[in-house]
Image (cartoon, rainbow, N blue to C red; front, side, top):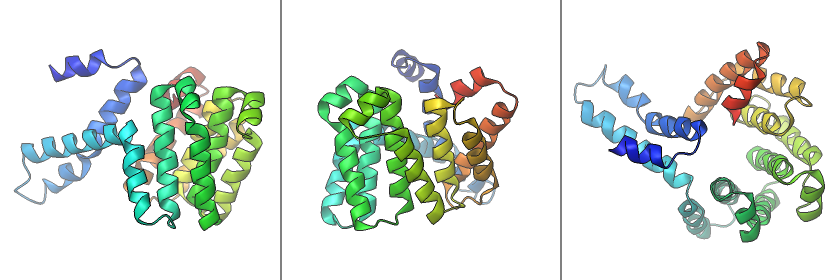
Length: 239
């Protein structure tokens, strides 16, 4: 029954993959712990998968931006709160679509949050990377002229912001991976050399978080497909 309900609300293969990744994200540690701790059982695995799915769906929902806003209110001087809110707005914009997001002012609000983060700490690599992603995403959705006219965004500024992040954290796996994804979605043919270089660096880096480990595995898969010049498969993977 649950499978039927989930399938009914999915409108793409990408949605199915995201759902599977969300469900499986929390079970990895449990799968390892069951070899060392006899108390780990089937209910532990079910609980881990349920918690991961609920957390993922929450972070991709409109509730996430409100929740982050509340947390940010405790200390607005922390750049991370502004960055997380900008990211949450980006997820919500993808769910609602570019037209609704434009009407609600999500793009400009996200930019304001990133500007606030950089005003607090101009050398925050994650804020710079998020700003780079913001610029490229705005251009991808609205076109070069509209993006520049409405938001002051450009692909050139996006690349510049990412390179600023690289100078601060040259070995960070997540930032390299996000840069490759952003350029792949925008203009793979024009930026293919940069995409391959960034994926290669993501593969060679040392992950320090669970997300970076996932990003590195994904980067290796994408780089392998790209080197085989299977562009259609690559496009499906980065969608």
